[in-house]
Image (cartoon, rainbow, N blue to C red; front, side, top):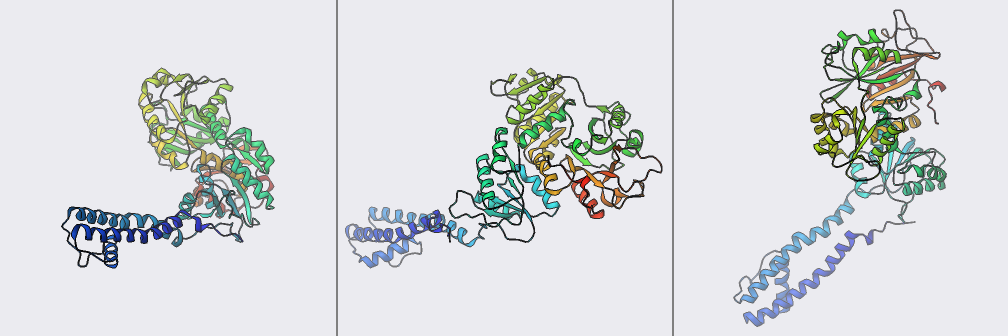
Length: 557
């Protein structure tokens, strides 16, 4: 049996060192006091009397009969010891005792995987890439256990309500434990750590799926050879999503829509000031009846509203997110104003994501200008993307769109600056955490995507068996069966009133219908596409439980 190496911990060493040193220090001070009183004050003290004085002074408890000295040397000595005693009581002791008591009185972190009845998803190492996935699994009531090597992070995660196991594969006292109830493993550490974790899990006899996030594309195949079921590079998937968001030559705009249906399109349109839709409410615009497209999102003043209310006003300059067939989106485009398709693309930042976005856009023949501080191959304008002179040099006003591939802090400032220099230009930004999306939108960004959102989208179908695509951080397009709706018209079903979801399309045979005429009823074998927030989609599944249907099973390819 292995025991934690607690006796060798730093808190133990500090405490033992202090306890061993204190008697020696007190005796040395007592001897010096005894000699000083004899030599300078000519008022001898015994060793025990001097020891009593030293302990009283060092602990700041006060004095007995010795409370006054005449010789300057003794005064200096006494004052020095007084300050030293204060330092020991209020500085040295807390430094030794507080970590000691924190370690032994706080709740200890688990060191092995839990033995629980319900299957759970094991996530190795926490980070931005798994934030949204953890939230999505929580909404589906799928238990999650996080295996974290960083003790400080592990404690913070547990304080937030997560179930955490602390340990690493380089620790002599760490044992993975039973894995019979592990539903799937997500490896989110460094590539070499992921490989160690995967090999260890397979050696323990785990035969379930293991999905690995890798940093370098060249490591995907070695990770699979090590035992991973699949390996993904979230940053490259994010780059592909950003590039598709910018250029219509890269389709689909939302990764995975084609996986749901080849007949549906998702489009972003801006309400031009001269559009007949500007200033009207959604009910007045009557977009669904006139075009067949469904408005599933609306941006106004930096805020995104999923499934906006009928009385929501389509303000000039606002952006709408619509779902429908190619023809329906084209009809809506004539009423609104499709995003500009003229001019080149300006990419700010040439890190891993910026490089991949530029590569994809150039591969499809788009004109690309790259700004970066480094004078390296692929960078067109060397300079600071936060400098207006650099942006003007890159012809910001003539760009079709600007893609911000920067860190979160510079992105906020760059967005505000770009909005001032080029109010009409389309701004697209990458962020690491889903919670930062709202912040950059407030700064003026039209579209923002997080690596957390992309990573969750990659694995949601694999882990939950749910065919859905995240159009925005809180908007999902989901493919469901017609259970409970057969024989009703879309209006009679009252899905929107009951769940908050909208029926945007119905798949029948090999066709996807987006226009529902009078008397159109839902049939038993129809496949329905609903759109709504994460919460409303969950409400739909509660109201209309889904049977296990092979037609709705996600592809694992």
